[in-house]
Image 1 (cartoon, one colour):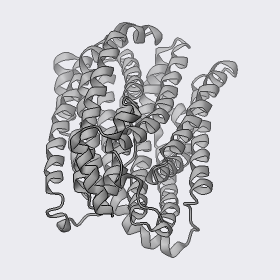
Image 2: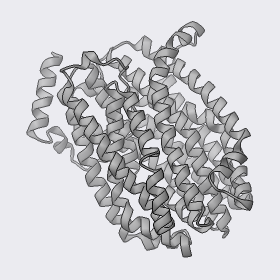
Image 3: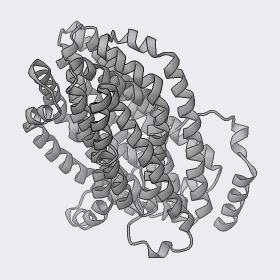
Image 4: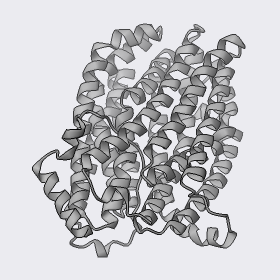
Length: 484
């Protein structure tokens, strides 16, 4: 089997290619979510937009389970690829898929049964509550399909095939974009139609991703019960911290939504717009963790520690520049955002406040994504879990509570941003300590090296990729010498 793709060559180029392809797919999906809200806003009922906001919070929670399992897929399969053990990679792919299918089915069933209680818990009332419940009960049964789609995409990225992973998400986005107006308006299904379109789109993502894994890379081995059972310890050693990490964020977001709900449905509708605008604008940053994760993982496995450190450095540099540019753009276009979604009153006020003052703070979310990728891939998944739980609790609840008490709904979102700044910096300093110790005491680590999956943008020419600076050339040369 050939050596890992990322253990040689220009690091920044690897990051850009992985990030840009994955970000394109993510942007397509996030744009469809934004289009969902746009089409629903055309129906002219604030309760519908608010219902989507509430439902999105619960859906984010359930999806986080699948994200955690996809991180396990990337971590284990990329490690096997780096070890040039293809049979082990094939066995792990099928075993992680089966484990993910079982877990996501159970989570979907429990969430479906308790949907009314979950929606009430985050503050939905009256007709808005009923609409959110209806939306979720259509969407939730497709969670196992989404889990398979995400894990299959992670398997593709583990072997460096970010292009096919991108195709799968683009397929889902295209299907949803076509079916949304058809179901919502042509068939007069309204909110039900938006949910149904999302279900079909998830099926499209799963089909394309599985096709790439099975027919292009032949990475799905036969399922055997005993090997599957034997692999559970290895799978869950990564998956449990990763799932806990990814569940922490929606729990924090649920608290934010609950606090905003106390100020009325109009603010919730504005928050729903922000919640879909930010992933579209910063898809490249959301993609970063998945892009840099496999790169860190393969180089760590090859003991190329300077390349590991440089991967993290380049990722942070890109994140800072990208967020600064997009934050300025969003600030300049905020009135267009308000106009497009027909936001008025309190909803418009919340959107303007976020676009003006808080977008730039997303740099610290990006730093935390990169730090999490480093924790996971370098054998510290529990550290990632600790940081994310800390951010969702200590970094959210007190800031959001007092922000709401002092400044109302805008204080709630400002409080959440303040917590992100503090924990982003904390995660970064912690990651630096770990990175500096690489090559000195890595043998003392007792946790399984993990990785995650996501992407960037093609800002540099192919010639610039050849040698970003003398530091990277020197590292690349030393890496090549070691490989020989």
